[in-house]
Length: 114
Image 1 (cartoon, rainbow, N blue to C red):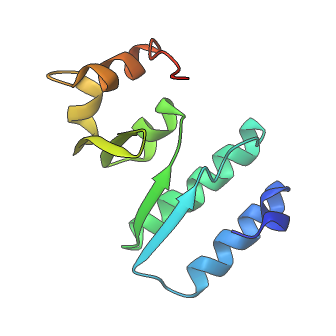
Image 2 (tube, one colour):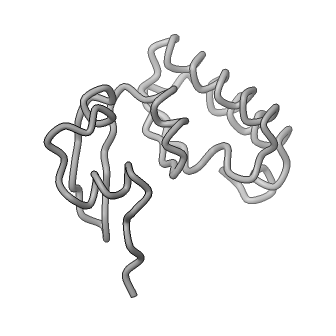
């Protein structure tokens, strides 16, 4: 998404609408709701849900666990560029049998590496 579109909520919605108009099979979204107010965030999430309902495969990065839980069907957890977990969302959020880094992230306890 061009930087000029990321700065304003209406610019993000416009960029998403343009992408949707191309009828892609897959759409990559990098933190599409970062720094948006709650109302704008809900609007963008509704667009994302509409894309998925239309059969578009979405690959979205987010640090927002609530958003991942609401929108995701699969969760891939990466650390330092390495795939640690790739599971169905409900299996990931159940927390069962997760590697330590993913479990710590879910608990909000993951230490920063320097």
